[in-house]
Length: 197
Image (cartoon, rainbow, N blue to C red):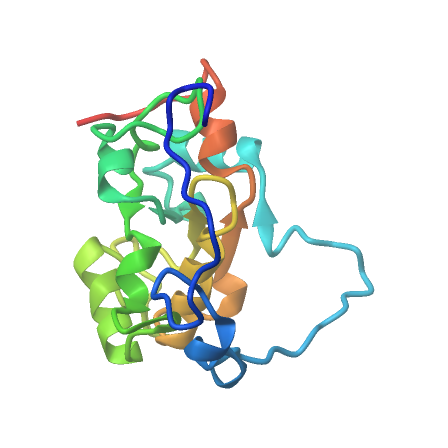
């Protein structure tokens, strides 16, 4: 910083300086959700995580009702359409053919980013993006896809979509998977199809 001509401040910050970040001021102990850890004994994650080959198969067979799935991407709208740069060098911009965009930040409470918006709002966001509600009666050729593959930049924020889909009641957990390679894997491959607007 100094070698590049940057200025430095010296001295102690006052205890009430607004630049200080204090966890206690956020009341984080009250906002941290608790989760139950589930240990799977079957070592089979096929029903939770999908890989590049499985997602590529979904993209290539988009019109085959038997394997139909909706791919939903948690990245920002700019990254999704390819107008905003990717934060990781070497990744192409855009999205998977047929994918829908629900930026995960759209699901979060504006006043408290550690919480989701009310579930009726989360549900409306998913529906507006194109994820149709399903019912037990759905089963015809024109029925909406029951399966949803959640993707993002690195496989992390896709989990927010998965939780939101289940909690708002649009899908059951067995119908939701996460593409853990996400855009890092898809966007870095020269052989994957990409749409950019």
